[in-house]
Length: 425
Image (cartoon, rainbow, N blue to C red; front, side):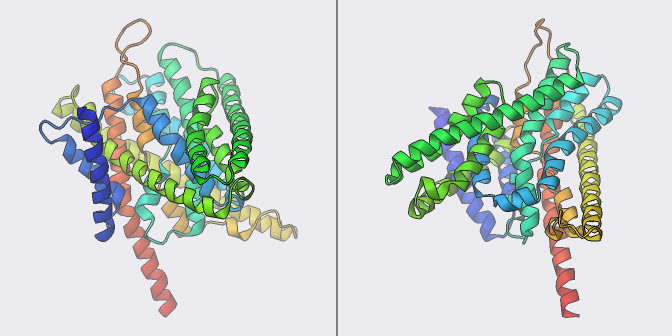
C-alpha cells in the first residue's frame, strides 16, 4: 500500500512542480530531476522501486507512439538523412568512443565492460531536450530532427547493449553476426508494426462511431505491439514507431476529426504525466546508485562521468557538422547538375547544428538498461563493476540533463538576441 501512496504523491508533485516551473519560466525536466534528488535524501522516504522491464513497457510504447503519430511524416522523410545519421551511425560511434575512453581512463575496465558502458550511454533522450527548449523558439527543422532521432535511436542502442552484455559473459563478438541481427530486429519490428496497424485499422473501422472504444484501442495497441514484438525477439521500438506512422497516415479513414481531437486530449494528459515521471524517477534513483561506493570513489567516478559526457558532446558535434557539410556539398552538386535531389530546406544552419549538438542528453532508457544489469554472471560470480557502471550512468544523465539543459537556453537566447540586433541594424 505504501508504494501506491508514494506514486500518488509523486504524480501530484509532478503536476504542481510542472505548473510552478512554467509560471517561473524554468525548465520543468531540470526542476523535476532536482526535486527527485531532494526527495531521495528525505529521511524515511521510500522511493518507487524501478523494474527495468516495467520501465520499458510503461514508458517506451506510449512515448514512441505519440511522437510517431504527431511528427509530420513529410518532414521526417525529408530530414531522414540527418535523422538516420544520428539514430544509427552516431549511436555506434558514441558506443565506440566511450568504450575507448573508458578502457584507458578507468582502472580495471576491460574491453567488454567498456563497450557495455558505451552502449548504455549511446542513446540520447530527445524528450529532455524538447522539454527544456519548448518555450525557447526551436526551429521546426530542429524539432523534427530531434524527435525523429528519438524515435529510432533506442533500437540501435539496445542492440549494441545486447551484444556488449553477451561479450561480458564470455561470448565472442562477431561483427557480421551483429549486423545481421540488427537488420533482423529492425525488419521484424517493421513487419510486426505494419501487421498490428492492419489489425488496429480493422478494429477502429468497426467501432468508428464509438469514441470510448476508439480511444481505448488507441491506448491499448502501442503496449500490445511492443510486447508482441519483444516476444518475437524483434525491435519493439521500431514496431511501435511503424504503428504510430501508419495510424497517423490513415487517421481520416479510421476515425472522425472529432474523435481525433478527443484522442489528442487523452494522449496529451498521458504523455504529460509520463514525461514528468521520467525525470522525477531519475532523481529518485540516487539512493539506488550510492550504497556500494564510498565518498572518494564517488568523487573519482563523478570525474570519469564528466569526461564521458564531454566526449559524447564532442562526438555528437563532429557528426552534426560533418552531416551539415555533406548536405551542403550534396545541394551544391545537385544545383550544378541542374537536379533537385536535395532541397534547400534540409540544410541546417550553424545555430541549429549547435543546438542539436548540445541536445544529446541521456535519460530514462540509459538508466533502465543500467539497472537491468544482472547481479551475477551465469557462473554465479558477481557482475564486474556493476556499481561503478550504474553510478557513472546516473552521473552522465545528471550532467547532460542539468548541465546541457541549463546551457541550451543561454545559447538560444544569445543567438536570438544577435538576430534581433542584426535585424534592427
